[in-house]
Length: 104
Image 1 (cartoon, one colour):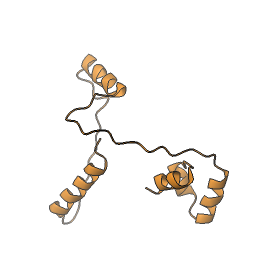
Image 2 (cartoon, one colour):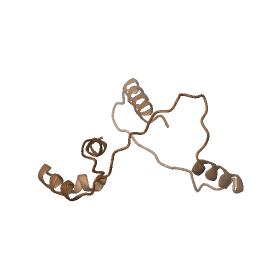
Image 3 (cartoon, helix red, strand yellow):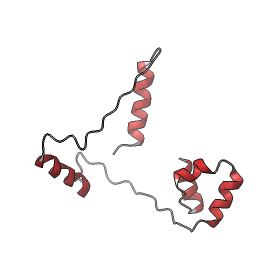
Image 4 (cartoon, rainbow, N blue to C red):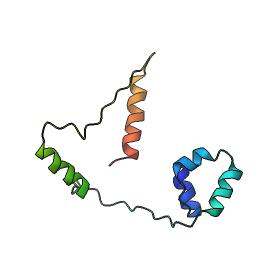
């Protein structure tokens, strides 16, 4: 959120790695002074629909998957092991907030 707020306020699009590399406000300020302006363009919301057309990248992935149905090239594997007590209701609330924030 800091990255997008800086971009919106200063019209300077700083790389996330730079935010971590520059730990003080002074260092960040000096860095931003030397950055070129990059106008912030707000992404407009579109009307809510039941279905949306797939993007070119999504169509390409669909076609490639159809060519080799046994391929696992686009599978995302991962797991998370949680130790201790887990409040399932709080987890559900947080996951729903995350989903609403990133609908697509």
